[in-house]
Amino acid sequence: MNIQEIQNRILDLKKQNDICILAHSYVAHEILEIADFTGDSYALSVKAKSAPQKTVLMVGVRFMAETVKILSPEKRVLLASGEAGCPMAEQMDKELIKAVKREYPDYTVVAYINTTAALKTICDVCVTSSSAVKIVSSIENPNILFIPDCNLGAYVRDQLPEKNIKLLQGGCPIHASVNEEEAIEAKKKHPGALLLVHPECKPEVVRHADYVGSTSGIMQFAEKSDCREFIIGTELSIAEHLQYACPDKRFYPLSKKLICQNMKLSTLVDVYDAVRGAGGAEIELDADTITKARRCIDAMIELGG
Image (cartoon, rainbow, N blue to C red; front, side, top):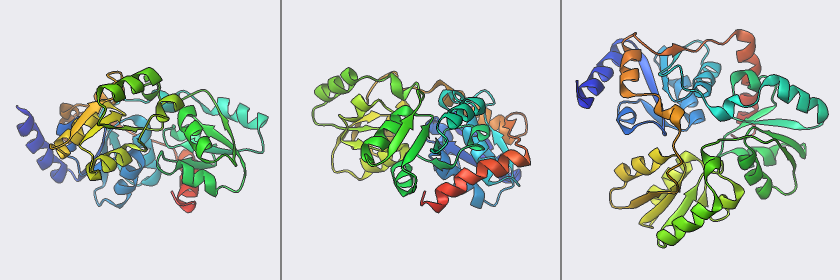
């Protein structure tokens, strides 16, 4: 079968089997074309909650599928590739953060949505990359423990100097692999281009950016901007997707290192296998984990996330 034939079979099977397909923006373009919803992890979880289908297939990584299950516990949730994890989400566990909380008992624990369901159970509020500054500014307590991404946390701290934000050494190894020299060199190579970066990048990279924002924010900025050239400081696939969306504009990756191997694990064939019942990993969370993890997500919603 060629790509189009596989896509057509997926479209037929997802209708037959009552499946909603969610695809994160970092996956391959041929998967985005057959998804019901595409976008950032939290936005996809919200879409899944309102979708009428009883089964949800997440084409992304495990913490994203877990978030879908937390928000829609009554639905069957599948992850296209069971091997697709997230180094950032998995680098801090409950025992570590419990120990840090004992050391800083008067701190509000703010968890980036890119964390496991287990870790969310002991956190106070969740944030996304697009809502982090707004949510943290809305928290009455000036003392904040921000986990796990120290680069996103540093960006929030720069925007909110009135807050006392404690950071731990953690984050996305892919975004953190880019250095300042690469940002400077890219701007020299493409002097007419705007540099758009994700706040998971290092502060020394962020300071050279013309725009800092989430994956969706970067895409929306590029699509609406009158500028014709952009350097994209997030996962390589975003430059590709933008080139399809805006063929009259030019998009240059900030660094060839910006490739997420875990996102690339999910293929169109994985999606096909999942919708026909021959693949996919089912996400199962116990009721106690769902209830406790849901609290920090609800707190985010209450604070305007």
